[in-house]
Length: 617
Image (tube, rainbow, N blue to C red):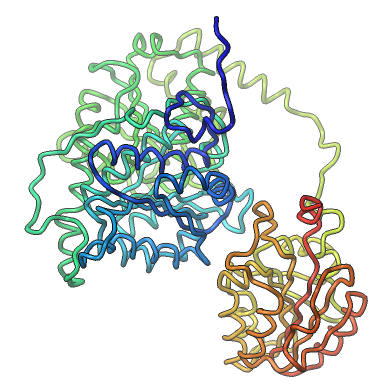
């Protein structure tokens, strides 16, 4: 035996496979693989990655920076977006690069990344860009980071429906291998159909590490026989909104379905034609389904013996109707394992409605008809699903359908016994709190008798501390809620916390809105020199406290103070004239003064993130 020589750089070396990759590293490798595939096809393309960090895609920018040498060699450019919708617009521009004969490449393939709320805020840009289309040798993927359970978000979000609203196809990988496979498929689909393509990621599928087959030539795709309209489906220099809509509805959506069917992205996994019960799932829920069946003692052979077949959906919208109908032929019962708002289930019912009346399709509910005639809830639309719940529900269904085997009964009994044993009392619960030395320990305190609002960032945690801080907005609207509330409130003044990253992302506009409305409010801009919640990245664009102070002054903020930690290396002479300067110990004095000040006032509080300061040391 020989000893394999393995290095950390193997993950981005296209001559090495298999390799160990995390989900975010897979996005880096994906761009390198696409470039290699294009070069092998005789195309001179370039890549472009942009977006805005957020869990579960909080580390994409760090991985892109670490792979800078590999990306540069492959003509792949990485630029963080100032916010998500501007990043979408930048990618829209990259698809136009060769339209005027000015392009340096045959096309630019692009990757956008962002958290679910960032998908939501980008809706207008997404619709415009997708209506315009993609370059024939370009294509765009939108890696959307979803948080179905709200573990690191202020809302529980699901992005598929935002994609569908913009007429973007969606693929749902079930792990790191499929991030690569479906990513390559997505680029090919995007080029063929002229559509941007959503790549759904979740903590269960992207915040994992796996050994994967990462050969650039692993996947091959076929071009379907599709009746293209005059001029094709890709981006055009001269176009109209009416022509774009007609092309989208009459051709592009069906091109995406045809591409899925031709390339068999959805497939039968277990069972054979003639089965009577079928289970359907995609992405994370496919992993849940496989786990749940194992809990019931059902493997591939047992499924076939019981007349069960499974169908794995790769492209969740638009669903390959022909492929699904072929799989569903002869089934008596179809059970769709799907969490959140149902997408696959409604398409399945549409696919089989005309020719298979009376077939049962269960998903959100079990049996029943429309409206109040729904049967019992099966897989709820709130929260998330887990293998235990799925196994419990499927076990009940299989027993009712006459598959009352010893294996299934044993699995159900084991689940029931585990539930009964799970009766330990909670000994201690740790309340989330600021890190040791965190600047927000000081910056979020307000004078007695005052109150404050939180926002997106670490300072959000102040709401469950004794700091008279309660209430928040979505990212970038901090204080805009008080514009409306103040008109109808007895309270004359509030403080609004806002992080430097949020200020740079979009919050500056909320301050301008408060000034325009003549609102009495004090913005506390917490400059900790890091986007701390996502790993301590630097602010995009090199934002400095001096820049913030200058911008606030130019906007018309007449009462502005800079409060700084005396241990920070702050050049006090570089701030605009007339700005009040105070040390951290005097924060309360400054706040008491501003609480009595009419109009918009602001405090720039400077103290480096403690965790980031420790890393730097």
